[in-house]
Figure (tube, rainbow, N blue to C red):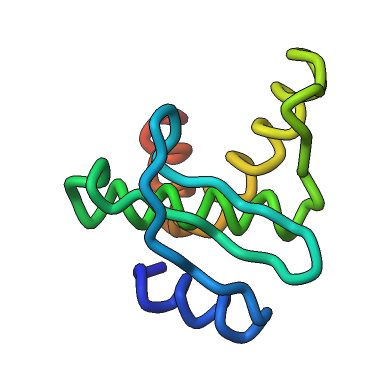
Amino acid sequence: MELIDLENIANREKICIRNFKMRKNKARIIEYNNTCIFMDYSQIHTYTEEKCLLAEELGHYYYSAYYTLNSDKEFIDKQEYKAMKWKSLICVPLNSILSCFYKRSI
């Protein structure tokens, strides 16, 4: 899946994507009245990095994997795992996964 496809998914779901300078993060999703993904483009240096960050933030949305600043580390780790799982499923083509599996089986 390409970056434009991920942006189209965000548009279809009415999720805004905004450039926002952050100190500790490159991307963050916030759900309040509307859902918005904030991306710090000054810290994002490659197409692949941008695509992966956007996919992960969309993973938070699709799996409702949100947390607050007060959440404990174990809960945060579980939510991050869910988001990364969605990112992997959407960004890695199935034929690539199968190819690796078949190579391993030989």
